[in-house]
Structures are given as structure tokens and as C-alpha cells.
Image 1 (cartoon, rainbow, N blue to C red):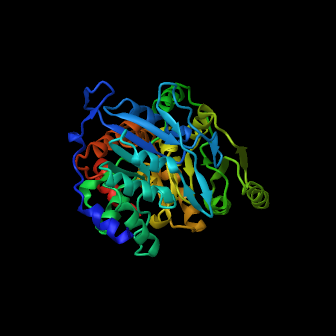
Image 2: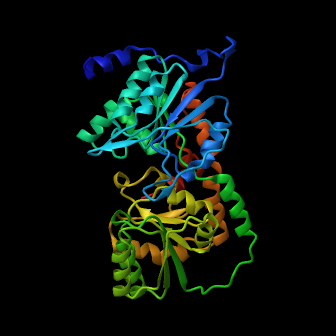
Length: 418
């Protein structure tokens, strides 16, 4: 069967409503609960919050993922003993990934719904989505969706890939708007945002808020970076911006970088050359320690792109600075409301970033109100319960909501972002 004929056949299928699915247990008794397979390359430790919420929802879920202990330096999640986790090894051949467990899950009559990592570089995901559709399952893609609105070959391939599913679960509203422009239906585009381990972090936040405030120098601005140290992070741009800010203002800047990686030695050499006051903390996976650094900083800066670092920072009440080129960003940048939860600078422009750094005390004059603004974004939008609510709607085939939660929350102030 050619890909064209396969696409025609899939489009001709009725999606069906999972509400009408009925399964029987081994005793022949009808079971109304949907059986859901979630297939991911691997489950990182920071997904604990949303996976715990999913496990407690009104469907039965099985998690398929590579049982590696770490992936690209990120520790894997240790599932609870009563969770249905099944090892699903990933093999990579010339940049193409294979995870045959996805196809096995698609073929199995054990599942009603298939939730697949939305990565078109996984050859087996194409097969699993097609097989899932042909065997009557509801097929969902979970991921970033379209990262840019370019009418490029890459996005054309993505369009074909996403068409294999019934719906998409997305991390951002912009991805939904782009998907709509490519012809996907709004009701099938579920914006659930992203999150970290909310309950654990909430306990840490409360403990930090209960601490007595330490006196500090009003002229000092504490700048923090939290990520693996690679060239993509563009911390060299940040260092040059800090150096320029110190030369052109009366402010003093204390820069701290948490994380290790291949760019560390190069960045250390640049810091010495620029004579910066900088602390390279190295790899740090102690959540309470990282939270303390974030809470005590005036701003977290991610000059390359901002992903879950935005959630981490806002959870502990610290605004973020990142760039405004949306085609070079991650979906989580949508949590940055200028003057409320952060600032956006011109992509790659160290002079503009320098200006933003100098402006931090003026933009965020009321530290307590800034904390509350940041908390609100996490507590109302970027948390695992909101994620699970949207994912549950997608699994049950309910019409997707609009997904513009940040615009609803902050209105005109949000619409005016760069």
C-alpha cells in the first residue's frame, strides 16, 4: 500500500468516539474504562507530576519507555511499584530511531487509545500511528507540534506525520495556531502546556517563603542560568551582555550557572577574559538546592531558548529573560509575559540583552508582587493537573478548548509582548 493510499484510507475512517468503546475483562464482564498506551522515548524524572496525575485518572494506562537510567544526562523516572510500566528499548541507526514496542502496542487488542511521542524521526511511530488507526484505536500525538510557521519541506513532512493521528496534545497555543494554518481542525488540537513535579516543588516553595529574608545590596543584580552547558544555550551572549551592562551602568552583576556540559571549559575561559563575577556550580540534581538558587536570584536568563527552565523559575517566583524570535523558541516561552513574568530581548543581540539586564530592578520593582505573578502562571496553567485535564479530554475525544490561557489570564498586557 502506498503512502498516498494509506492516507486516503485513514482520512476515510471515522474517528469514532472513545466513549462508545467497550472492553471485557477475562471473566467476560464489560469494562467501561478506556485502556490507554502511552509510548515515550524515555520518561525523565521531571515528568513525575503529570504521570502521577494520569495514573489517577478515569482510564487505565500503560507506560512504554526505554528503561535507561539516564538520557542525555537527565535521570529517568522511577515508576511506583504498582504502575504498569513496560520496557520499550529505543535503537538509533543513522539518526533514525526505532521503538518496536510502539508497533506492538498498536497491534494489540489490549488498548483502545494510543498516545505517541510526536517525533517524526522515529520510523516506528509512523507505523504505529497508521496501524493504530487501521485497528480502530484513537491515536494521539503528544509533543511540540509545529515549532515554526515556515512552509518548508520539514514542516510538510511534519504535516503528513501529524495527519496520521486523530488529534494532537500540544505544549503551546502558538503551535495550535500554526497547525490550524496548515489545515488541522481546532477541535483536535489540545493545548495542555507543560509542567514539572508540582506537588514536590510546592512544598519546597512554601518552605522558601517561610524563611526570613536575608539583607542584600540594592545595587547587585543576581543572574542565574540553569541548563546543560552547550553551545545552543548561547551563554556566551549572556556573558558579553553582563560585561557590557557592568560597563554602562552602576549595577553590579553576580552570575551563577547551574549545569555541566561540553561548553563549560570554553565558558570558563570567556568568563576569565571578561573578568566576570561568576560561579560555575556544575551539575546539580538536588531539587531543593536548585530551588534555593532560583528563589534567591533576581532573574533567570536563557539566551538560547527557554523550555522547562521557565516553569522551574516561575514556580519559585523568579522572572525569566529569553529572546523574542518565536521560530527559534520552545513553547514554554509563552509563559513569559513582559513586565509580569519576564522580559524578551532581540534574538542574539547582546546589547539588547544588556539593556534588559539593567532594567530588571525597574521592571520588577515589587519583588513580592512579581513572585505572586509568577506563582499564578504555574498554579493556574503550567501544572500537571491542567495537563492531565486536557490530555483526558483528548483521550475521550471531547472537543479541544481554545488554549489561549495566558491571553485570558493577562489580557492586553500579554498581547503587547515583543
